[in-house]
Amino acid sequence: MAISDDKFLTGKFLISLPKLADECFQNAVVYLCSHGKEGAMGFIVNKKLKDFSFADLAVPMPSAGMPNLDELFLYQGGPVEKIRGFVLHSAEYYKPGTYKIDDKVAVSSNLDVLKDIAYGIGPNENLVALGYSAWAPGQLEYEILNNDWMVADASNELLFHTQDDKKWQRAMDETKIDLSRFIFNTGHA
Image (cartoon, rainbow, N blue to C red; front, side, top):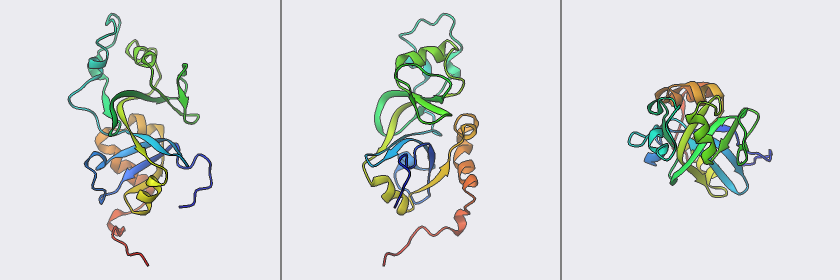
């Protein structure tokens, strides 16, 4: 797969296709934070954790003045470092340690962003993830060529404001590809 842009697929969505067998990624929408010659890294953005909440993370923080922490959700960001926390958020928020992906989205992994979210002074839009998804050099390109993933433009509307159970279908709809006409098994000459 020849990709000429030095940011490759950074800032795009990966949409898992039905033939992808990895349970972690079934019906997953992944936001790619980085993609280049060294590999790729991103977060699954449509799978909330059921057994762990933001309130569980906030235990070491004083709770006075915090909003209802039960209304803030944690997401399964991916199978790598499942206990490491990240916040994918709108780019207007910036602190030391924040990595701007583009002019709309950034990612932070320090405790300050969690405290700011808890106190209502954090980024306008955010998604808190535990763990991340990663690919070795050339691995993602191979998986795309193998029809495991569809690539789509990302939008903050889909990323932060679409119901999780609708994100996969909406992302697929935005590609304008009818999966019923898609051939998943192909031969190689």
